[in-house]
Length: 174
Image (cartoon, rainbow, N blue to C red; front, side, top):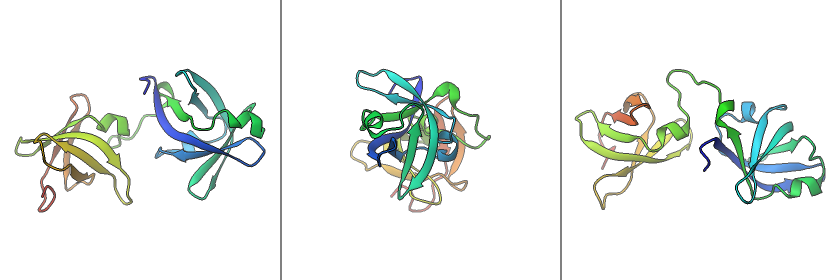
């Protein structure tokens, strides 16, 4: 992943003949990212990033369907198939005080309130009501810990120092 861009989805196919691309979204901010006029980048073969401007966005089943400016035919859209869709870091909006982008949480070290080092956040799952952080344990042979991002568990998040403190609840780490 280039350090200047953040993944927002993957263009998995085209849709119809009017240049729509079918996107499997990985962003919590679909409305903002995909609204007409938004600037995105398609990571092309060789790693270069081609700027695209969203002309239209609609939902279809579990996909987001987008049309990019100047790419309003099937032939023009076809070349984007299979490529990652990204947003530039400079285009990210500031979040509220207790909100974080996934890239800020992944890689943070996790500690218990007792000071014990639990491990490192390696992935974030979004199964429903709240996100779940997958923590790779420091002790070898132990399965990953699944930590719900809820106030009762997550007590402190220090992005600058890449440190998270959690309160162990009964059954959470067993």
